[in-house]
Length: 95
Image 1 (cartoon, rainbow, N blue to C red):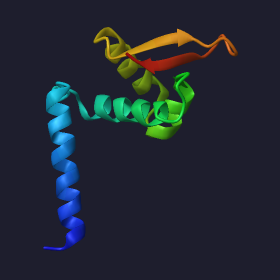
Image 2: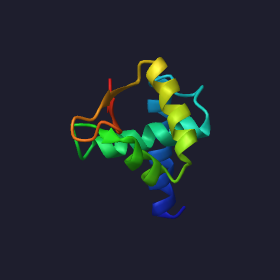
Image 3: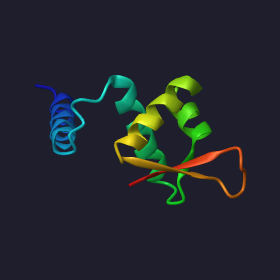
Image 4: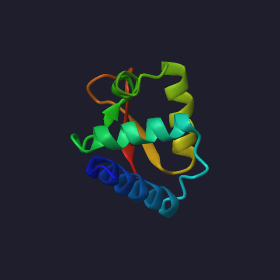
């Protein structure tokens, strides 16, 4: 088998194990996409990412991102705080 395919299979197995460990198997595809987008943005900025960045980087509609973030917040996976620099924007951080 092609070595690249083996690497992809290993990465997918690792993701599968992490999703099981974090109990993410019940997440919808939209929830997973928003969650992974928040994680990716948080890796580069500890202060949190704003909702506009999540919308832009996820490629999803603003309303879908808002609904999904609300669910993730209710599950205590993320927290949202009002931005000090722009009161109209909320910052998202992982809990």
